[in-house]
Image (tube, rainbow, N blue to C red; front, side, top):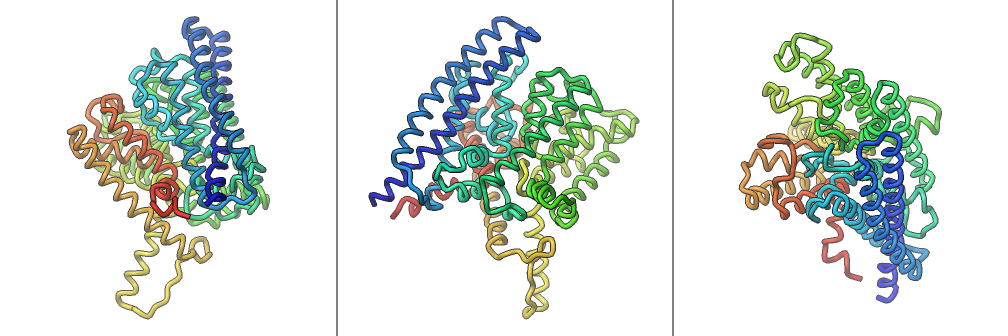
Length: 500
């Protein structure tokens, strides 16, 4: 029992390291926001207050993170079990959510419930918000922090931690596996620290390319930086109340749409292509081909449905522009807006809802159930149908020509069961606490559980500000469960998890 207790205490080291890193990042956001305000002044008061607010938040995170890091280091062990790694992942996300909320409390005078909701929404790349007037109420340093937490959460703060601290003796392989979404990680090497660094390089490279392209298209530098961060993370936080629609530029819409789709592809394919210097991995990936097919078909149907609708006039290009953006922002779970999708014809709205359930590819920054799981469940369904008339038939489920292990199939089925159970429970609780109509509660829960951002069937503006504190905390929990895909957080609540 003594060694068990020591291992649990050692978890404080990775948690402290992440909190310490967040503190430094908050301070850098304050400094960078202040520099932007000097180069392009909007409000001297906002500049001065923004730096001071983030300095206070950074100080608290650095102090607490440093204490945890030193304390955990005294109890560090060379052998850390999967149990301690799962606990570390859960605590890292909870601690990051709490300390990520402090800048909103001190910088925007938000309540703790609102600040925690905004922080969790950012880190999980959900993109839902409780802020009703972004352009007037949020200063630049806080806007930059709001965008950066989405970028950090997109690829994963634990994956970043493993990349930066490969020798911290915290069960990096197990921690990596608990955070990287999906049921497979084909193409990734056993050296997890090296894999983490390469994934983050791709992530940073794509972000940088988008930033440059948006600048060339005429987007202001600060807006281009923030939107590049929140596009590649498929997060959806914007610096404008009207989101991407505020720029009213078709080429900005199309570029951002293409990068949202890029961010929805399994990063293991980029890794494999880089390692073997070939794009054949994309052609062999059934999930990638199905994802492209879904996006292509959905864009075609929405273009046809929106063509001639008074919302967009008689321009085929305008219909395609809005259709492509709506498909990209929905299937990637980004949640940017250029259009009022609630005014779509019923069939078009049904397609948007289906895309919200499906989401992007496993191993991407997108949310939703994931295309890979949809394929696996479809294959299992057809297999069981065949068995009804050929009971002795032995069917092997394959993906990309390779046999899918039974554990991966079980993972997909159990994930779907938990997903639907939490969906039902969340809707009932919201209807009970808020007395909202079931469709509105369903849209809000779907948004949070799928890390989606937009909430269909909302009454009034697509915003979570009017919900009570209890509902906001529930939504924050649902976002965390959706981002970590249930198992890591649910394990911590299991009584057997804490037994010897």
